[in-house]
Image 1: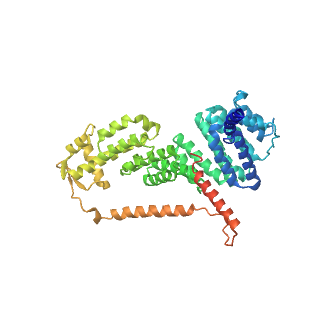
Image 2 (image 1 turned 60 degrees about the vertical axis):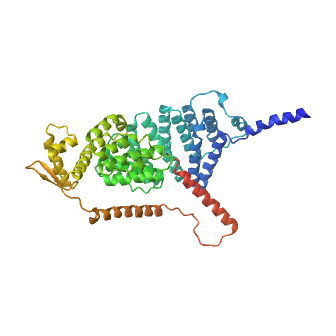
Length: 487
């Protein structure tokens, strides 16, 4: 009797371990069923949910699991099955999950919907990129694009946008991004003719990234200005578009528009997209310095960004003080970081702002000072520092950066008394910019509102009310999780 009790106690944990949760293959089959249902009912929302569930499983993907899923989803020995199976590396069969053994007893149902075939391409492509098999990923992505050109279904558009993204990413990882520029332009034309708005937005961002990768800012601006208007159907794509637009505006010296685009991209990006937000903040800091503004210390102390923004904090401190020597040392110290971030040319532009800031501090501190002392305090190391100081002071007075007069005969600068700033229109301009910012944010929030499909004002039963509330909760959860998909 006691032995039977001991045997039951020992065997009970084994059952609990095996039933901790569904296997990866079982979850992939559920995703396939979800895609098939979305294809038949033409509900794009189900396809989006399937992609979100797949991205949560990408770390658990193994070769045996993918092989078993391809056997389940595709017809064996078909063209798609043979091609995708060839991309997978060969591994031992003992890595197969337990669920595959039980699935062998069942007759797999073959799904012939094109959405499931495209999903298999996406699944294998993501696995190859995660395994750092970039050449195989490049070949797989090219084959998937060829297959996509023959499909014109709205339920495929969401899967196609993901394939476009990884298609460009695989070529970027192998250093052959310029080779697909013509294909991306052709795909953008196809999506425009098919009214695939999500595909248009994705491909436009990929083309902008392609041009900016090779510093082709003029061509990027020409494409952006002539492309269809960006309607922001995807928050992730809209954030990327704002970031690329901010970079283009920065190079074109349109710093005010660049600052607005970069700050908006950083604000709209999901909290999980830390790398993207760091890049937005780096460019926004440089643009604000070029505008003559000094970013607040809280910008550099954001959670998870302190180390990445440390070079920019020291650069901002040098610009704030107006010390040209400190600015040179910081630029030399972090030259590698600035070159990696591809903003070294913008650092060169900041030299003039450092000199102007130092000159502004001098004009506030001294009512009259000689040009030689100005050249000494600014640490100008040119052949004729006094002449350079004179030209710098004259330009600053002409631009309105300082309120002073230049006495050429005696060789000094005479500063005027600082008046009450509240007697000018500067406070009005500052308040107006803040009010405009708040109003624009309100308008964007109103345009981004999503309403339930059933808006008819009719009496509903308790059962319908519960069903509607459940759908609204699922929709709210979907919208909240959707922001973390692509980053």
